[in-house]
Image 1 (cartoon, rainbow, N blue to C red):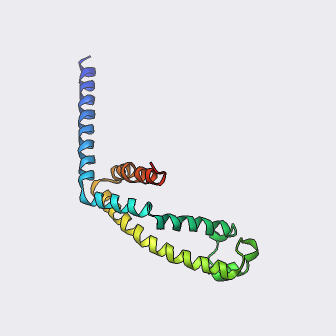
Image 2: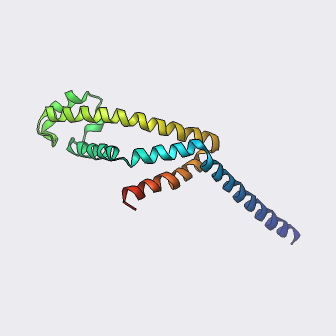
Image 3: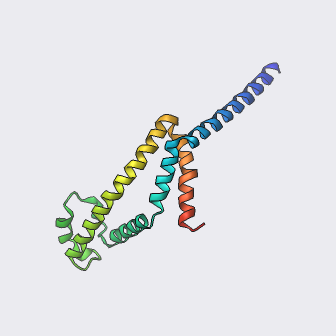
Length: 151
């Protein structure tokens, strides 16, 4: 019986200290200047009208492509010439023009996303990826969704 009581007391203490340390870790991350920069940059980028227009344009572009687009290593211009009839583009020129615009926009946003990823990665190295991911989802992803839904 004494052994059982010791196990229960030990388990309770371990749980108490674990929760206490977890709370301290969360506060450390939330108070870290880099996390605040990450949060601000990510929310600003992912809720901007320009980024949302880029995403919308990307979905519309993808919807016009033949289904086998992602399965090729071929240059887009060469590839689309033989598949224009399978696409929803009116001409090869329209398809190529839209591809070039999407390529430039992708490059622009990829650079911005790399900055966000580097900050998140540095925080994950410092505090652990599961804690940073949990707080990112709570403080960034949920906020982003709320803003996009107008809440």
